[in-house]
Length: 567
Figure 1 (cartoon, rainbow, N blue to C red):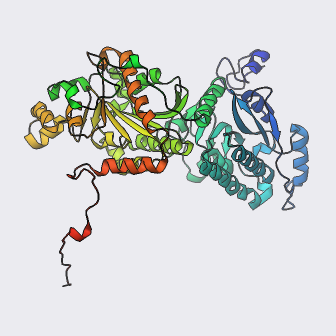
Figure 2: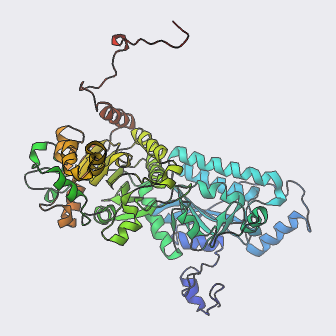
């Protein structure tokens, strides 16, 4: 056969064997709904779901031919009653409901029967408490059904809302094309959106947009790659990788959360997995700590993930405007137990540092983190944050996109998360940019890390009027782990290898794992109200002299004031 994209002649059986993708250029040919179910579900697990009855022609619509005739032709051509097939089955042993759309059936347009099928799929997923995967290809609404078709957008949206309320994972698998009412309802409401390479998705089609605004559209507009760059999808994956990614997501969403015991040989001799007495940490000049914390050889979030988790799927984008490379987020398994991980990412080379914006997160990054935190709360799984940033990105674009508001939203969100949360400052903990990921049940700091309201250089420039006074400012700020523990600003110190985390990544990751799992073992099993209450009490006490940090009795306060024009 000839590839419709690169025009190369390819062997038909090989083409079919790799789920109808071109081995030369990677073009993804359309799949029928049946082919999609075969691709995704374990071969002996599929159980069809039959949606309820719907009217064939609610409006008595006729254009160049009667609508019932068009339906009959589509049914005869495809062998399907509507553009959607629904089945219950397994993906890599995890139970799942899959609703697959077929573009051959009137362009995959959404009429009453299609809306009913998607809704029925969501209701079965809700009843069985299993994830819902939506394999989507659609040209939009079905004009022949008028407002009946329009109402399917609300009908399917509220079906997904019910899954949100029940804590059931939803995943959209977007293929080419996905437009109109489908894109503006269930396709973009899923918790995770995975797009196939080159797949186009949007509300209005490019031709309509160009005719309306009379402007030439950007290259690659509305393609999966364009959407990923603008934070609108989580990943662009070829069919060869989709089942594996779905398998990890399904396991993270359905496996019970359990405490993971830390192995004894991962602890520093003479010290537990978390040091809680500042006297057990040797004193060092603060500036030495700063330089060590900034060492480009220290393990990054991605380095640690490769050691901590046996499975991980990275999620991208804030679903609004962008995808900040300085923040890495995703779901994975820690010794078989589900966990959400969010962390700043720097790098080890100049190129890596530049690509990751030197760990300086933009508003997109904080909103991406918030989205994954909300997903973790929905699924009831713990959150681990790994912090290593000089601070939030101080740029014009960041201010225009609401940097301060994005950070503030995260502070509020983390204070109310109903799941266990652990934060670890790996290297630099710079100002509000660090705190936006550190309002947690347990806040740890690595032995050679720093945590400060401002960089020593910034403090020196403002208060000493001389950036060269940074070492002196560092001492005054008490930003090292020993000082932070002494003032009980953190809950514990994570030990590092003798010569620092940068000297032995494997040992550093083992020590981090022991500390994190130890904290999670204390937190997992607590009810959500207790978690939130104790977390808020923890932060309430900072800056007070009373250990309990209870609000003052208003009867003991004396406040006098006078407003203009009043006595």
